[in-house]
Length: 459
Image 1 (cartoon, helix red, strand yellow):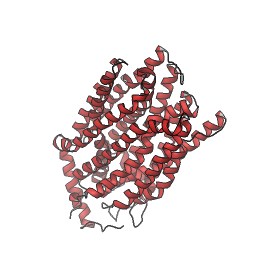
Image 2 (cartoon, helix red, strand yellow):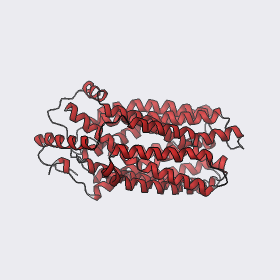
Image 3 (cartoon, rainbow, N blue to C red):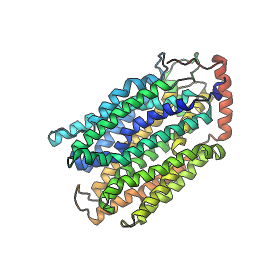
Image 4 (cartoon, rainbow, N blue to C red):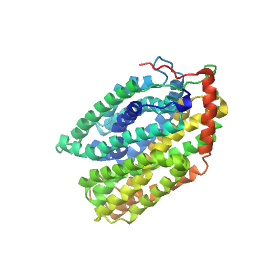
């Protein structure tokens, strides 16, 4: 069977998707609760937390290209990328727990502990998630199947996000019984253990099929030279940085929005659950709509819808909770269409590089994009902390009008502007439906020349 038409079983797609559910047990907790955990439970200032996010995530982002080079040059009987999911499963779970543990130390000792645990967590995340992401580019050469695979991945991620958003805070309060430090430790212990099990399932159920030309010579310098000449990669790199700055910025402030502006922290979980449910609907509709209109076009429309409903939050009164939740559901529905497209388009960018340069370096392409993701998270988290500090936020106290304005703007106008910039980036993305078909056909012919049949699966 030609690799371009390699269809994946539902079981393999589900198995792959579970891997992102595992990562999101920890990743979503970081985005949604880590800033609030550091300021209100762990005991460091918003400015110190912002600097921590910036320093650690940018440092970790620089580690990603290095990890990409290693992954592309890994050769085992399990393939290049699957082994890393196995090797990092337990360390990921351990660091997920330690990063949300509050030690009995001096303020300086706590800050040092936060830096060490967060650096190690992000490095393990890179060693796990980069090969996991690159795996989607070598499980099949069929661009339609890749979009389907990304949809399974994102549905699993959204299900995990739904669990975190709906249950994490109630679990913290229940297990902590007034001691949030204990509540976070027990809650993250449970989610970290689940993550380890899910990673093992992903390793066991997936296979690598797309292999580089055996005649391809290894050259790190050429890998990165190919990257810098790849126009679609440059667009996706810029988009990824801006997008994840925005997600970290808004995601980190919404708990403050509910706690201090709406005054109903108890409704934050319901707000998230309904929003994530709307996201899942958008994710499920993304594949069939993208097949009709194209990935780029759908991505732009989804982002523009996200701009409108994100910006609308500045107009919402704190007393109208149904309107707040409805607006978020519409926002998440619009954004849900874009989520599978980001990762499917990354795989297309890797194909574009192989098509143009006759060399494949899947992990290097993905690592450079994930570099942008990590840098974006670091910058966004830092901006969130700095904005809270600049507007006069005081932990666990009644906030001034100026502080509340800062929280509202960070939940609405500021991220809406950034989402609009993401849509502008996509006007410069040149891989359309006809280019995808041309790439797929030609790459299949090349691969079949040195690999005429699918690679036998190795358990």
